[in-house]
Every structure is written in structure tokens, then in C-alpha cells.
Length: 443
Ligand SMILES: [Zn+2]
Ligand SMILES: [Zn+2]
Picture 1 (cartoon, rainbow, N blue to C red):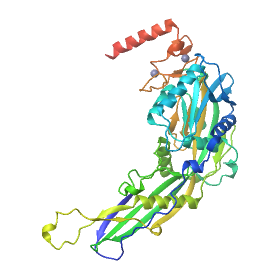
Picture 2 (picture 1 turned 135 degrees about the horizontal axis):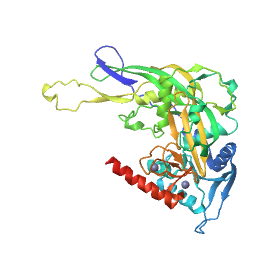
Picture 3 (picture 1 turned 45 degrees about the vertical axis):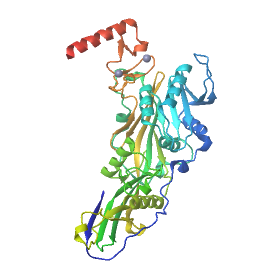
Picture 4 (picture 1 turned 120 degrees about the vertical axis):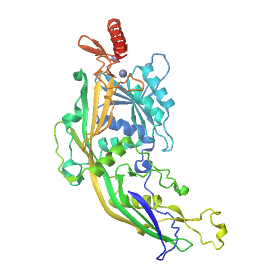
């Protein structure tokens, strides 16, 4: 994908200034109008996931201060607190909100938490949540959960006749727990989620004449991928629209790791018509697209127009040669007309994703893997939660609280593996010696 420009002295045409009237996508909040019902919707999703749900709970606290939990989830002995923030899309949840939530968790003795927002999280907030083991749902994730678990929008898998990326990474591989005490980890939610995307091919050809009479041929072609649930383009070229400062997209979605991996799979793996089989190992959920082929194509046309709206400079006709080189090059602004963007094909393809939830002690883990390639989008079991920055590979979970631990942070006590907090003095001492010995050997 890329733009090209060449000049030639022939032909006819004229600089155009077409106003960009087309609706440019739909904002997430409009596509998914939660309004004040956020808490209710989230509670509903968790109920579908098998939790018992209580709202606006004031549990006893260690300090005696009042703490209100938006949604309290229980499953067996496990308790999970959910915080909901219904923010405007432009307002990101910051690290201070996460800290407050963490304090609430500690104060109430509820070990696990999920922070849900209709907007996004700042990168500091994401970092904090990762080390604190708090699960985050941003607007996009929420939308997906909504489609996966709420009523109504799920298609019966046997009715799926669309193109899909074949499942090349099976359930056994996706659900494998490669640690020393795998029996401590229970898989409690297993979903193969079919997420619809549009792949739209386009080609732009345009010719413009600058005031000196020279012709400029501009061309661009490629494939754009639209998330059919979030109604957003996931593989935008960064930097587009910078030249035309007027059009800095405020709705521009920051490319996530998930977007990047999905786009790669969609562009590299051939989609097929494949029947989706129900099995007893996991649930199959197929989400219905939230926009039509035509709406998706319109979105892409708008994007291509904006992406190719730019200034092009030209050599002025100067009568007095002595002035040449002393003047800034003049430029004209060009903008493609909608008719110049040719949509060369729209196809909807389902991307299968393993969406697994594990639990161990008081801790929940989330794992999300592209079933088409086996590439991991998120896996909160994979890395040690006691490592502040390094996130070393998990070798065991604590037999008492369930946190994932690396070689350095896992203490063995006979058959058991425990974290520092739950280790006996003897085990800690042995661990320290092992550490010293290790450091000695490494030097
Ligand atoms: Zn560690
Ligand atoms: Zn522990």
C-alpha cells in the first residue's frame, strides 16, 4: 500500500477542492450506546460467564472506611470486584483511578479486580494494571464481550456461511498450561469467538493540473481492514492526513497489538468457507457484524480520500530568471473526488479467537489467542506478577493465592509452590541461598 506521484506535462484537468461531506465512520459510543446502563450491561455479561452478581456492595474493610464495589462477583469461594467508569471516549482512565481501585481491593480483601471503561486506558494505567494483576476492559474489549455474551447478536454457528480463517491452532494447544503445578489452574470459560472483519480493496487514480499547467498523476491502492464490531479501520497508515492538518482524525483508533496481529493474519492467511463445528470442549460464539458491506465501503472511501488529501508543490513560471530559487515553491492542495476511489472488492471474513479464562486460588487469568495462527494477543498467566518490569516466564502459580510466579519469585515447599507472602521462613531462606548461589555462579 502506498501513494505515488508523478508529474507530466500533458492532459487536462484542474485542482479540486471537494469538501469531505461523507460520514467518517461511527464513533464507538454511538455504535455501542451504553449510556448509564454500563453497570447493568457489565453485570449481565458476567452473569452469562457464570458468576453470581451483586451490585453496589459495601463490604467490610480492614480500615473501617467505606468502600463501594460497583459489581461484586462470586463463583465458589472466589470473589472478584468490578469497577465501571462510563467516560467520554476522549477521556482516558489514568493510573490514579487504578491505584484507588487497587486500594479498595486491598482494603476489602478482595484479591481480583476488573476495571471496565467505555473509553481507553493510559499506558501508565495499563502498566500498573499488569503488575497489579487487574484485568482491563476498554471500550473495544467491552464491545466484544457484549457481543460474545449478551443476548441477541450472536448468530447460530450452524448458520455461518461466510468466509472464515481456518482454525489452525487447536483447543488443546490454546488451553495448555505449561507450568510445574498445572493442576492448580482451572479453565472455567472456554470460548471460540468468531469476530467479523471486512477486507476492502481500493484503487485511487487522479490527475490534477497545477497553475503552471503541469499535470500531476496521483495513485494509491491497497487493502483496508474494518473491524465489523467496533466499526473502525484497524490498519490505518500512520501519519496520513498530517499534511492536511484540517483532517486530523479525532476518531483515529490507536493500533493495538490485537489489531496488528489480526490484520497480519487476514492479509497472510487465505479465508475459506468452512463449517463451524460445535464441540463439548468449548463454546462457539459467532458475532453478527454491526455494519453492512456498503457502510464499510463508504468508510474506506472516506479514509482513502483523507489519506490522499495533500499539498503538492510545483515549479512556478517565473519570467525574471533572477528570482528563481529565491521564492518558496508554491503548492496546491489536492483532494480526491469520491468517484476517483474505486472499491475493488468487499469481503467479510470471520477471525476465530480463543477466549479463555482460568482461575487459580483468588486469581483469574485471561488468555486470548488467534486460532488462525496461534499468535498470542494476551496471556496474563504467561508472566510473573511479582516481577515489576521484566515479566519473566511463569513456572508455577502460588498454591495459596494463585499468582503466577517466575523462577526467582516461586518458593518450593515440598510438593507445594508458593509466593513470598505465603512461604515459610525456611523456604524463604532456602530461596535466598539459591539466589546468592545463582548470582555467584553467574559471575
Ligand atoms: Zn518474578
Ligand atoms: Zn501466594
